[in-house]
Length: 194
Image (cartoon, rainbow, N blue to C red; front, side, top):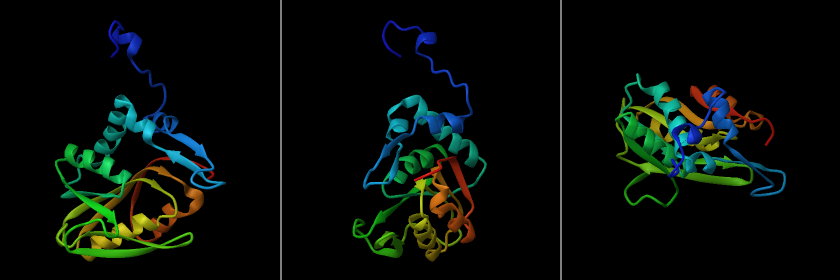
């Protein structure tokens, strides 16, 4: 609260559902990183403490009755959400990193991009068989990264309970691909057009 402001002057009025409010706080940046792309920027959500708290509470409410051992966050924005959520759910956190960023023995999974391929890794001892894990990222576009994360965790024997993200871009087919691959999804909001 600003000095001198009363509680009512500084309060945020939310007259919409939490999902609609969260969606309204996402900035769209046209033609980034290349022409024709409508980039969905979540940094405004992270910058405002009340909006960030609301976002985390949406996820906490969804998973507070789920006995999770770990939350696995995908490099890099999944780290932000995943580590906060792991703390709130009294679970451990597993970073799923871009290839070559982890210092210990790793397990790797390659996935296809629009032009070429990439790989993600986790430590070989990140989890054990039967551990219940929530997989989280900021956005589902083509679904390749989240699918690779699911496969990595399953290589170690984990039970990937669900995939979660703030934003779904359904026109790019990722959420459909992930569901077809047997990954239940929780997506806070959806944007048409990419």
